[in-house]
Length: 57
Image (cartoon, rainbow, N blue to C red; front, side, top):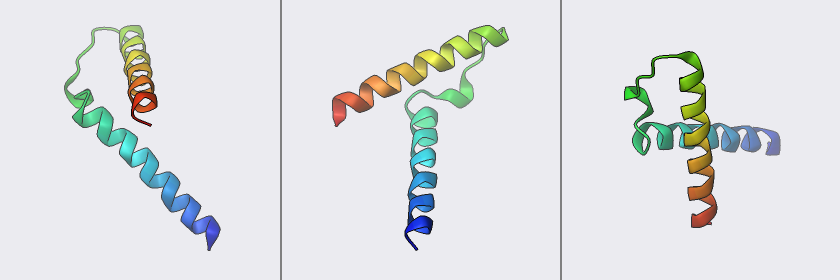
């Protein structure tokens, strides 16, 4: 039972991160011209998310 609860918690943690990306960073509407540019921007958004979440907790 504890394993199932852990899996559910992990799943909703991932969904929460996806929601932040969609709502706060508007990721679905970002257009980049090259693959490396998209990777760099994703890295920067991830860094910003980590810094924001560290400040809140």
